[in-house]
Length: 133
Image 1: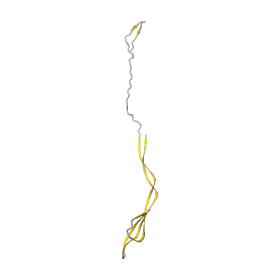
Image 2: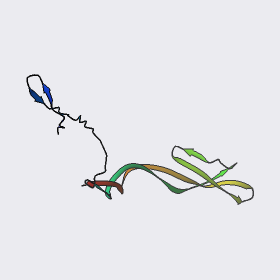
Image 3: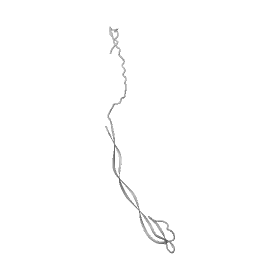
Image 4: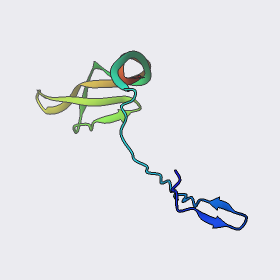
């Protein structure tokens, strides 16, 4: 847009108009705003699975055997171990003309071991996650 001023004479007889040109300045303004976009859905669900575990276990058993001895002894014998065998003496007093200790029997305890594989089914749980848009 031009502003007209008074015309002036210039040499050569031409009329000259003065024109004012406005100074224009542009400025940038930056602003932020939240824009609703896509929605993300997160769901979890428990999942169970059966797994078989195998482990070696040791079982011990004890067998009891009564062994008659019927031997006269001077003192009560001690409990003794012979390898995997434990011998427990059983003594009784018997009335005779004289008193004697008679080893009437021994209790033999034999310990045996066996290793077997024991399998069990156990339930394992985990959580799985699904993410959808």
